Length: 101
Length: 196
Image (cartoon, rainbow over all chains, first blue to last red; front, side, top):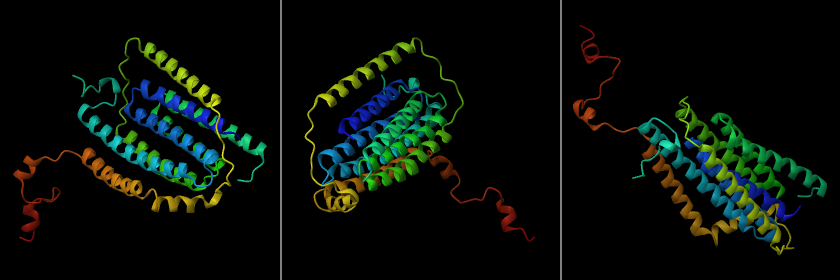
């Protein structure tokens, strides 16, 4: 096994997440794309931790932090989506212009 | 992990194919419920990749937190806002999608050339393996103590903030009109003078 395989896989997952983040119409799918992005970063950190720093696994510590923050982000993001849905009666990203002039 | 190289390669290929396929399904499928279930597939295959990377604890945490908490939360969100409506089609939406796909492919090419061209200095230290859990715990309570405590405070803030944002609006004028607590099913006349 090589480090490059994991890094390429994480890069591919990151690009898929970016594509979904930009092109999704549904707000919940945007949240799912953000989870994909965070997971690709986690995969990078774990690969570096295993291949470059196997004795004291600081990459795994960082991954645990990122997982925690991702859980908090999902909770707050879904709360925001629910609140907007209650006010606007839609989850279409094209109609969310609350912060736009 | 004491697996042969061939076994590792084959399982890496299987997990990578599963992860990329389910991730593409998350992004591209029309039905969002299918996307949410495929997201669980992405998380599970990433957990398998963590096991290949000698990190059993983080793999277990990944399954517990992502599949058990985040994905279930997303499914609840889908069920709460599941309005069966077709989005109004935007004119020339394909231009945006094509441009995004182009940018993403370019980004992948950039990252790929960077990954391949960089001379990584691999470490030859002994792998922590199953002792990684002990090492992680020592990190948490020595040199990563401040981030650890900050993360706990952040989790509390996110908990309270999510409740505050998502709860229904309280109507103060209705409560001002009826200061006494009333049971809607049972009028007061029946409960107080029921024996007459």
